[in-house]
Image 1 (cartoon, one colour):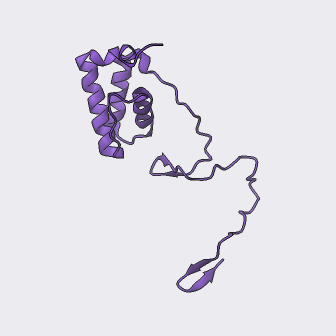
Image 2 (tube, one colour; image 1 turned 30 degrees about the horizontal axis):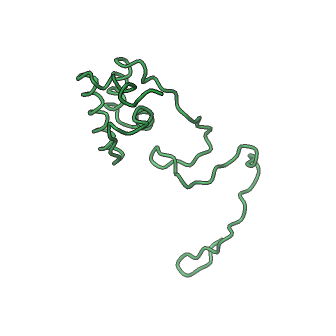
Image 3 (cartoon, helix red, strand yellow; image 1 turned 120 degrees about the vertical axis):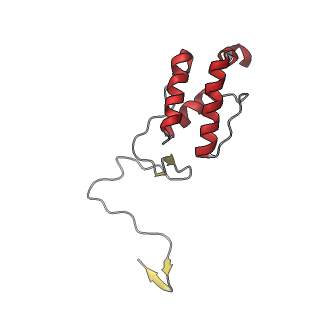
Length: 124
């Protein structure tokens, strides 16, 4: 079993470390998430946020970082099948997963289970 330090020897290069810090700063600015260098899955988290970002600067910085460190070419863990609900480019965590076979083109949505009241009137 290799240690975390031996797996992250690429962080000892000052130019690479500068790019990692720049990615972390851009991620913190855009997403409000503070990534630490000692996190177990730092590479995967950097890759995930680089895929989600709308910032061209973060995308360029991540691509430069991947060019310098070949072991950072990480494939996405899960495939996006198009049935997830997104809000501003991020998957809504508590959204129910929709299945492709359960939702035909002509099928109506199931009726609401909860009574909705709008301005004192029962709606739908």
